[in-house]
Every structure is written in structure tokens, then in C-alpha cells.
Length: 204
Image (cartoon, rainbow, N blue to C red):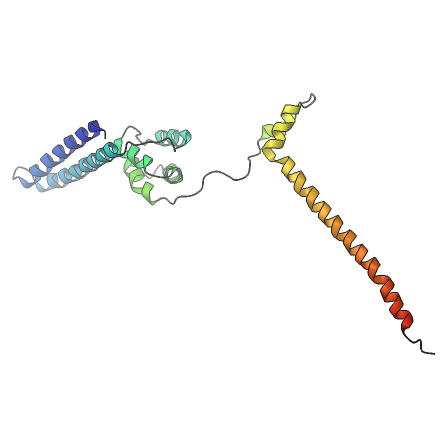
């Protein structure tokens, strides 16, 4: 357990408690009370995030670096304890989804941190990436000099050419085998059919 996070949580809870005590006192006015309560709620959320971090240290190893860089470029504070705990507790596809929303609606979203924390848990979990290899332009730029064996093997391994050729050879063999079997069957059946025709009486 990380006691430093617990110490921060205690400080946040003391601050929130003091703010709420001021609200119930006679020193504050009603408009001020509303804002003070909102501030206390935010402080308590930070305290809860610190407690979560104390019990389960936030780990973002499962998050691609480009997603984290995207979040930072959109103004999501990665040094914020609530943000980093939320990221660590959710799937990378959920992070990608909420970042796409923020990017598409950047002009309309003023409080991006709050929007991020609200929408992240609501994002669906989806599969990332493609099952098929991505063909790049560099793959089509064949060298002018003779292709080395290593280069050929690398291309064959990337696109699984050997497996495709094996499947094609097997399928072609099976087709030819079926044709040959059909011809043999037809050849065997013809003599019998001719004999039966001769046994029939020919009308005059």
C-alpha cells in the first residue's frame, strides 16, 4: 500500500470537511454555499482517487503511447490523479473513443477534463487494430537490384505466402482428383450400358 497517496487523501478529506463546516455555519451566504459544496465534492473525488491509487497503483502499460500523447495534446492533464486512475482502470479502446469525441467536438467542450472523466466509463469496449496485415507503400517499392533471399523470406513471412500457395495447391489437386475419378467411373459404367442395349430386342 502506498501511504503517500493515503496522506494526500487525508489532506483532501480534511479540506472538504472544513469547506462543508463553513457552509453550515452562519458566516456564508447562499450563493457562496453552493460553490463551496461543489468545491467540496471535487475535493472528495480527488481523495477517493488517491485512496484507489493507494490500494492499486495506477498502471498505464496497457495503454499505447500514442493514445497518451493524444490525450495530452487535447489538454487532458495526465498528472491529475483522477485522470491517471481512470485511464488505468479502463480499456484502451474506451480511451480512444473518448479522445475521438473530444477531438471532434473540441470547440464545444470547454471543460475537457470533466468531460473526459464523465464519458470515459460510458465508452464501449472494442477490439483495436486489424486482423489483416497493413500494406504500406514501401512494401510495393521493389528494389532495382536483385532481391536478396532474406528480403524474399521476410515478404513471404509477412503475407504468409507459403501457406496460401499450399492451400492453392491442395485445392487444385482435389479438383483434378475429382475429375479423374468421375472419368474413371464414367468409363466403367459405359461397357455395362452397351451390353444391356444389345440384350434388348430390336423391333423390325
